[in-house]
Length: 256
Length: 341
Image (cartoon, rainbow over all chains, first blue to last red):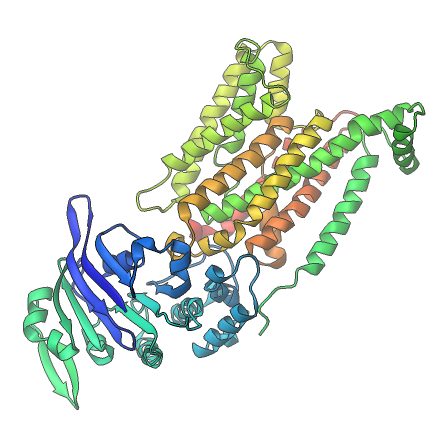
C-alpha cells in the first residue's frame, strides 16, 4: 500500500500540490486524471522521490524519506512518456537496464531470466537484437514497458512492488493504448503490485481504472470509482468544458 | 535470444595489434634500434656492463617515450568515453569542453610565473598546475552551459567550450608573450603536443593516474549506461546523478590534465577512439572503457610513429598528426549526427 499524507510541493511561489492525502492499494489500477497543470506528473515525481515535498509518503509502513534512491529502485519502477537513448543500443541492452539496481558488475541468472520473461510478456523478444533507436514509437514504448517491468519482475516476500506510469500512452495510437491497458489489467491481478498511472484520456480512464483520482489545481477534487468521480459536474468544474456522458452496454462514454 | 555480447575477438585483435605497434615504436625513430639491442640493453642494465649509445637511447629515451605514449593514449581515450557518456553525445571530447586548453593555460602559468611565485611541489608541480587549470575550465564550461532543469544543451555546451577555449588560449598567448625564450619554446611545444619530453617520471605519474582512473571508472560504467536514457530515467534506476557527475568530471579532469601536463595538448583521440569502438561492437560503456585503453594506446602509438618518421630525423609535434586525422573524422561525425543538434 502507498499512503500519502498532506503532500504539498511548490516551485518558487507556485504551489503545484496542495495538501494531498490519498492511499493507493495493490491489485487495482489507480489512475490520475486532471487538466494540464493540475499536478498529475508532479505527484508521480514526488512519489518516486524525484522532487522535494512537504508531508509524508509511506511505502507500506516505511517513510519514503528513509528509503535510499538505490533501495527504492529495487521495488519501484517508473514508465515515462517517451524515452530515447543517446547511443545505438540493442533492445535487450535497454531492457537489461531495468535490472541495473539489482546487480553490481554483471547480470546474474535471475537478471537474465527477468529480461527474457519481460520481453516475452510484451512481445518484444523478436526485436531483442534490433537497434533501439530504429524502432517505431509503439515498439519503443513496449520495450520500455518491458524494461520497467523487468526492474520489479520478481515478487518480494512480505512487500509490495510499485509501478508508476507517467502519461505512458501520449504518443501511442488507439490500438497500442488498448493493448497496453489490457497488459496492465493482467498485471493488476498480481496482488502485490501497486499501480498508479497518469492518463489524459477520460474514456480510457473510466474503462480501465478501478479507482480514479481527479486532481485540479494541485488539490484532490474526487477519489473513488470511475462512476463516482467522472461525473458531468466534476468534469465540468475541473476541465472547464461541459461533457456529455452516455451509457453504452454498461460502459461509460464521455464526449464533449 | 542471446543476452550478452562476446567481446573476446575484439580484445584479442586489439591486443595483438597493440603489441605489434608497440614493438615498432620501440625500434623505429631517428635512430634504428635492433631487436637484439632491446634485449641486450635490459640485460646490460642489470649487470654492470657498460651500455652502448643505442642501448642508452633505448633505455632513457625510446622506452619511456613508448610507454608514456601508451598511457597518454589510454588516458585521453578513456576521458573521451566518459565525457561522451556524461553529456550523452558522441561528438564531445575533452578538447572541446575546455579541459585541455585550461590545462595548457595552467601549465604555461607555471612555466612563466612558477619561479616568480616560488610555487613548487616537486615533480607534482606541473601536473598540479595543469590539473587545476583543466578542472577550472571544465567546471566553468559545464556550469555556464547548464540549463535549468538539468538538461545539457549540446549547442550551448560547444559554444561555451569555444569561448572558454579561446580565453584559455589567449591566456597561453599572453604567457608566451611574457616568457623568455626557453619558456616560450616549452609553451609552444605544449600547444602542439609532443612526446619528446617523456621520461621515467612521466611514465610513473601518468601510469598511476591512468591506472587509478581506470578502476574508478569501471565502477561508473553501469550508471553511465543508464544515463544514456536521460537523467530522469537514470534517477528512476537508482543512480545518484550529482555524485555521478562529480565523479566523472573529476576522473576526466585528472586523466586529461595529468597527461596534458607532460605531453601538451593532443586533441581528437578522445573523439575518434570511442567512435571507432562503437562501430566495431556497440555502445556498452564497460566495453567502450576497456576498449578505449587498448585502442587509444594503439592509435596514439601509431600517431607518434608517424610524428617521428614523417620528417625523420626531425620530428613533428604529435598534436598535429592527431588533428590532421581527427578533424575530418569530427566533421564526418557532425554531418552524420545532425539529429543531435
